[in-house]
Image (tube, rainbow, N blue to C red):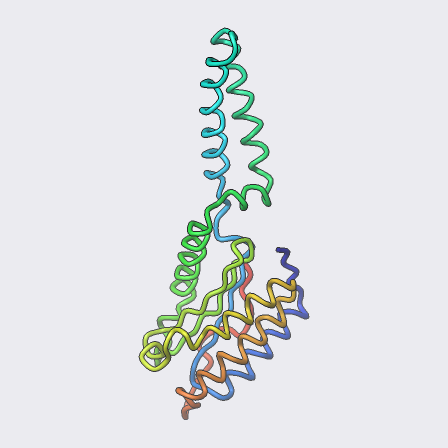
Amino acid sequence: MTMDIDSGVQRVISQAIAAAEAKTSGEIFCVVTRASDDYRFVALTWAALVALSLPLPLVAFTSLPAVQIFAAQLCLFLLTGLASLWDPLRLALVPRSLKHRRAHRNALEQFLAHGLHTTKSRTGVLLFVSLAERHAEVIADEAIYKKVTANVWDETVAALIAGAGRGDIAAGFSDAIAHAGAVLAQHFPPQTGDSNELPDHLVVL
């Protein structure tokens, strides 16, 4: 997936956040990243596994001396390692469960790093997308989880994934923000003295 974030995209998303937050005391915060890990260790792991599998068939079916087998093993390690540095191949080699864990961990880190847990009423909501992992997630603070079950955010996540899949970050986030705003408005209407505690723009990592 590619990511093209220009001032126009930022403006659309900022306007969507402002419109949604005008109807609620909740706070919506948006983050997108190209990848939640570089997975370089995966390239090295696969290179090592492939290289380690080479000596047995060579010993069993050829009469090559040990030094040539070692040289072939080293060359295979280097070639496999270099091939695995190509992003599409490396990502294809990463287990889906590992990609999910890394993206989820990144989402949690962003939630804490940007202070969504420090809003006055504990009503911060993070909309997070990690493109390489094809992962989208909604993380809501304590007060929201007491009133809103996790499955309510399925439509929000679906909008994020659909937009990212089309390469249309602006539309994906705008649709997700609108849905999240409607959920928040239902449970957390505007309050007198509300202030905007979190920035109304997309954070790009």
